[in-house]
Image 1 (cartoon, rainbow, N blue to C red):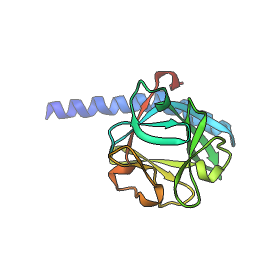
Image 2 (spheres, one colour; image 1 turned 45 degrees about the vertical axis):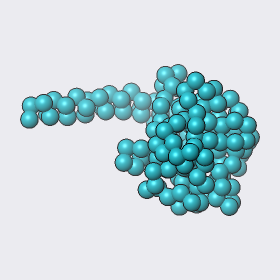
Image 3 (cartoon, one colour; image 1 turned 90 degrees about the horizontal axis):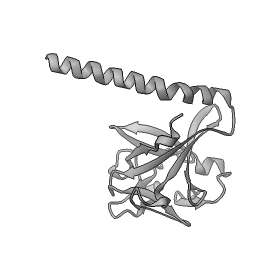
Length: 174
């Protein structure tokens, strides 16, 4: 009983410190700007299904990357749109964005100017991050076990293919 209370106390304290340390600058940056990039975070995004990192090579995307791949380094750009905050996923090496076209297929766009196609809602589900397209609320970013893209129009939030773990780069912490 004593051990459980101590673990609960320290984990709660860690969450408070982490939230106070990271959320405060993020919220301040978001409240200061109505449009444009509010916050950019350098990340690696690991697919739970393929157990590898998402990488962008040219115009192709797969879930077979490792941390030493330069193409696996991504950036989550927070954007304010219609009063809500969304994220765009940008490849650092290719300077291109992951987008969902009108047919519900994942594409790589050089310019992220196509707002609704390149914006995602970042949610947490069962301890994992999901990326929901704002183009259609039933479309989710996902990868198969082989690392191939599972098209967003065939992916739902509860599927293992739609779950990700974000690893932040130390340089992205404000």
